[in-house]
Image (cartoon, rainbow, N blue to C red; front, side, top):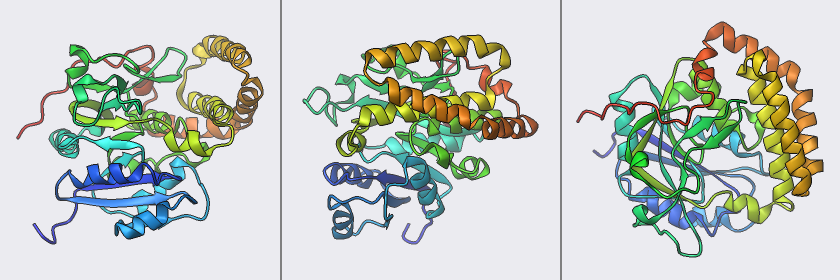
Amino acid sequence: MPGSPATVAVVIPSWNSAGLLPRCLDSVATQGDGIELLVVDNGSTDGSVELLRERSVKHQSLPHNVGFATAMNIGVRGTSAPLVLALNADTILEPGAVAALSGMLVADSGLGGVQPRILQLEEDGEGAPGDPDAARLYSAGQALHPDGSAYETGAGEKQGDAYRMRREIFGVCGAACLLRRELFESLGGYDESYFSFYEDVDLNVRGRIAGWRFAYEPEAAVWHVGNAGWMENTPHPGAWNARLVARNRITTRAKFMPAVALPRILAVEGGSLYRAARQRRFAATLRGKIEGLSRLPGSFGERRQLAAAGEPEAARAWLGRSGFAPSVPAARP
């Protein structure tokens, strides 16, 4: 009804995404009432801010790129709805996606976040909005390897029956996920020291330790290009990605991984350096690992705080699991 408070805040961090924002914003407009929209512009120079002004979209313009984590935190503070949809600028929502996601959170108070079926949007035309069954998956939920590194379940795979089932997962992908504001604020939001990459994994780990659960809702479909703005606007995106992932992965592991996993972690990290050398990203990867090691005192301090306030085993229980836990009960009407 007119004047009713919004139930979902859609927060879109954007960096030089003028070519992508229109279809993302148009898809948000199809989601019905009860939505509070805020775009946080990370110092764009491609006309993004002018586009937002022309479309009368509420936005906050930052003087420079502060990264995804900080931009999301700013966006959450600038909104008030009880549920927050984190959304990349290179996504497109299928109709009814927000309703399906919010229905799960309303039905289960123990869920801290829900992820849609995220589909790979191919610019060459393979798979297109409006035909979600024809696409390959980008993510059906985050999962953890035994060494504590994370991956997107189903990435690059064709959709089978298993991906049509609602289920509990380790955590949600930051490209498109609906979170309770209560969870987000109680955890202090995304770790802003990450800048970008792995901040969603870290939030999932901390959320699990604090007692929250996460779920996958395949009835909600969202298309995602994947790092579109980043790849176009970063001078050396491969090297920058390698450094940030290497650094932030060490930081997240230090917050929750058991000491007995150290030999496995060292083996995996050594292997990653070998692969980086073959892919000509050795210097960037090594720099990221050194930065991650230099942050260990702070990470271990947070580890102690997390253990004192919650249960690290709640996150460790997902090590080596694919994310295909028993399905979550259907939302009640």
